[in-house]
Image (tube, rainbow, N blue to C red; front, side, top):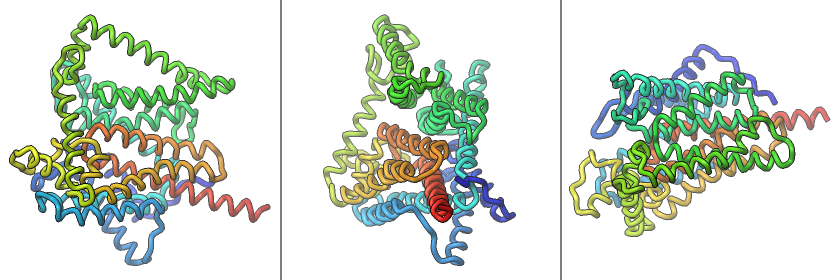
Length: 442
């Protein structure tokens, strides 16, 4: 398959650099960011707007843009969210979030358009992994510097030495780094070194997985363990058929190792080991406080109740927290945003209503499962498909981890959607070209 990088002209090179700077800084919440009317505006988004301006010029000049069919579902979601503004408790906030949603959807279209013309699948995945590596290095710097009493943009400075990169908090950092970890783990397991040389891919895997670990985010570690066990079971099938490499054997042993770790963990709770109990604080396990679990449970229940109050006409994304806070008979301010709701699937139901949420879920399904099935059916080298699979699997697990959190508008999530759309579009386009060439030669 022809996956070579397209030559850059000067203008394309500048646009490409702007896109990758925006991708690199997408998770930066506490640097290269500032507050406007209660909303966090990131330099990453401002740079993306410049790219969008040039996309608009291209659109005016050429008149049409080829996009993945699944994208049309996203446009319908925007329509539903806009209509539901009339049912929001705070119109100003609802309009702001609606514009934010439109921005993210245009970002997907813009990045896909330019990168699919300028990059190969291998170059995209390689550069994307390097972006994660850079933020992983920041996390390790934070972790190490805390031992000498230096607080380098650490938002939760305590004896656990938690790392948060440039994100608001460690859990946000882990939610971001889990995507890089899964991409690297999958490619290492498959021994696919077309995007990066073996030694660099292994180093990237250590950096990314290590960043999730030193974040000490329970959500991040849980998702990472689920992924490792899942791949371990898949590798077991390969091992049974005697097609196992050393790496796959190690993955096969992972479920056993996780089981042993779980037993040791339970024993540590039983014998009241201080470090373990401190880490469990907030979950209500082993006699610890349950404030974290209680807050999340309340967020789930409150978001669900908000949906049940108006299942067909939602309150839009910007009206969810305001609706929950009013429901609890408290005063709403913009500062309350981001603390009341929970689970992006429940947020979709509460924001768009049941019909609008259907198109959101359909979009995610068509992009992940549908994209996987389309790529699998196309002819071509399996190793060319595996980077696409890695991106798709990472998106699936990112969607899973966001069920334990809130705010579907997180910039890294939409950046990843844009890159998944890009590699899928490139793969489907190139495999179709090769198939036609093979027919002509036959």
